[in-house]
Image 1 (tube, rainbow, N blue to C red):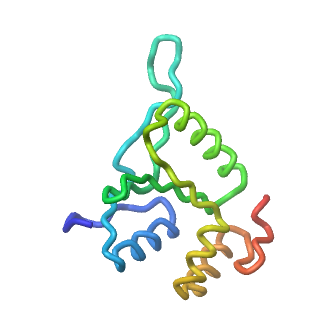
Image 2: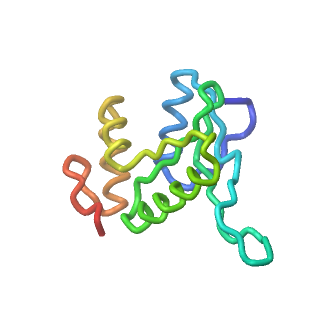
Image 3: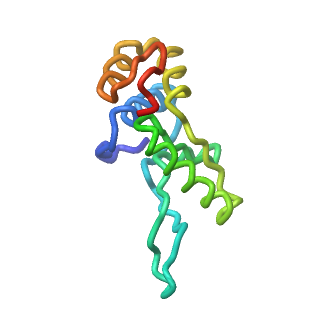
Length: 131
């Protein structure tokens, strides 16, 4: 990342992913682009998708979905539209299970416990994720 002030992340999981990327020297930008995915009859944008991270060295957008199941469905729908409208854009959606695996791999059980408890889920089983 650059020497710019750190972004204001929407969720603690985004800040944690940024720390991991920084640790490994992976360049990233936070929500740098917004992709329109729905327009009204007059042509005005009524819905858009802004992936959480862009990794310029590998030309990949990353979207984290570690919260409520209803948000997962909404993000999946937006991602389907994104892929239809912008097939040349690569986006990886990280689900709660993917984020848990990442936190376990990097020994961040303390963070995982805190973030999943805040979301009404259990870190080791994923119970409560379908609320």
